[in-house]
Amino acid sequence: MSKQKLETAFQKIQDEGHKAFVPYIMAGDGGVDQLEEQVLLLEKSGAAAVEVGVPFSDPVADGPTIQAAGKRALENGTTLTDILHELERFKETRKIPIVMMMYINSIYAYGIDDFAQACAKAGVDGLIIPDLPLEEEILVTGALERYEIALIRLVSLTSPAARQQEIAARTEGFLYAVTVTGTTGARTSYHTEIGQYLQQLKQMTATPVLAGFGVSTPEQVRMLSNYCDGVVVGSKIVELLHQDEREQIKELIAAAKKSNLPIL
Image 1 (tube, one colour):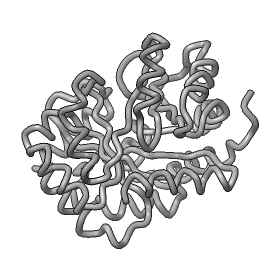
Image 2: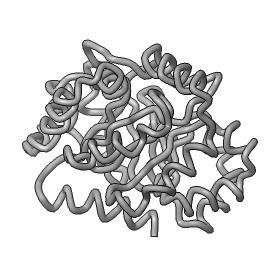
Image 3: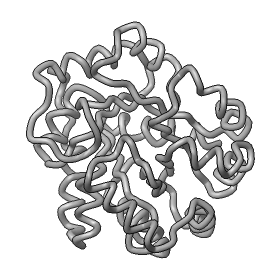
Image 4: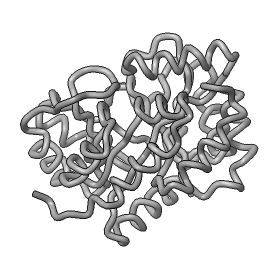
């Protein structure tokens, strides 16, 4: 089952004393036919799971790098149906869990139950929907539960403690801890209390806590991983794939695997 696949993957990494690295890629950037090669490269490099972005015309959570990748993908004619068909085509080839990151309009237009069924058929294990608040989750939770697809919730620095607690209690797969106030994209610094924020989230849930948004260097990967269970890296991975800098991707993933220091 999909939820179990995510849980098993993260448990294995924790048992090995490592931290999880979840890279984000934009499906269709360079062509949908590149998806298999990209996923298998990341799997071979040691990623815990791969977050597959779906291009969208109004990506409110995305910074310039991912917006540009989404635009390239749309110009290539990439559709949600194309992505699901491609994921289904090579689902027996990969062992790594797949998480799709997308906006609610695309799911609604596809048909919520049809989409959940197509995800299950394609071997999708979890979903991240950044513009779907807790109060409106009922739109999708029934269908996702029927097909055992995890709904991964995002929690922000600016959320009140009570709301952070509620999000942490509901999340499945992992809790996505947004580490900046703003959209995705590389940052040179973080809030001075970022470590305390991540540690507090760790106290709220037994589900793995991963830090994301703005993570772009091995030093940032190591620093943030000391406070939680790992990181999600998006813009930097998208940029490196676009520039065909695959060795740097391996260095980022290796930095997470070495981040097995005790919590500070």
